[in-house]
Image (tube, rainbow, N blue to C red; front, side, top):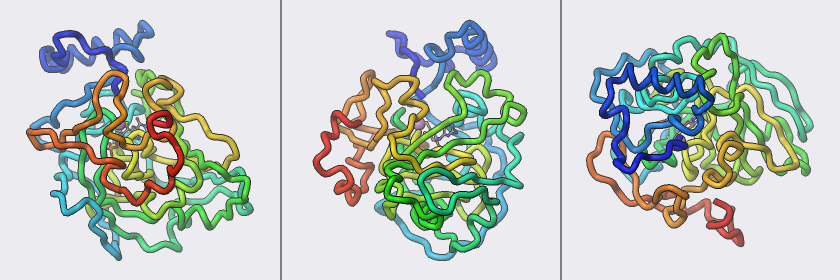
Length: 320
Ligand SMILES: Nc1nc2c(c(=O)[nH]1)N[C@H]1C(S)=C(S)[C@@H](COP(=O)(O)O)O[C@H]1N2
Ligand SMILES: [Mo]
């Protein structure tokens, strides 16, 4: 994520410095406590041309498929699985693909608690069992202005949440990523407070577009993309799509979210993709689809106008 203050020359340090030096320098600055200022990010850059590792995911059975990206070309899986934000496994875009192999994704349990009638801790396979896995092709856009089009395999978030019977006090849903230093040795350099946390208002979480992904491209998720279970919220900036979820809480108050805690002036709770709202340090009017040369205009709600009624009456500039 872009907490980096760009140098006036605007040349990315990793473009002029051998990667190893760049990484070491990041560590050095992280050591000095400057991680959050310096080096958290190499945004807006192209995916690397280096040969991608094979995608090891197991095939999953997918029922209904829906194209929800305006017929746009699907981004190659090699790109989507090698250009990631997953700070627990390193802050460079190619770090998660290299480092996330240490994450153990089975057995995996999810704890559901808070304002609901049927809380409990449930094994992931049991969590998924009643649901048919479907595939949704969604656009996905990072606040750093890169975007991808991905066939995600999973279940509507609402279908899973409803099973736990949220009460009328459940105004928001809070999500938490696993935080295990043994499995995530790079996490000490993340520069963000961990565990990673995110949240949605209950009506956003219940919207039919909100999705819980367990796979992509017909295979189980690569660890770097959030295995074994991640949110996919296509009308919001990528950081709302929290990875490797271990805890879901129904809560009455708006829950804290990772990037908002770190830099509230730059990352709002709602984080709806909105080309008219400038990020304090850069425009959000356009984006670069990974693998493409030219930028394209960014669409309101990332091209999912059906979510607009969720925000009727809200000032979408103030509530960014
Ligand atoms: N736990 C966790 N989830 C996370 C992140 C992270 O660093 N840690 N990064 C977020 C950001 S900033 C983005 S853009 C998306 C990237 O998802 P992708 O790697 O599958 O494209 O993951 C989001 N989920
Ligand atoms: Mo992001």
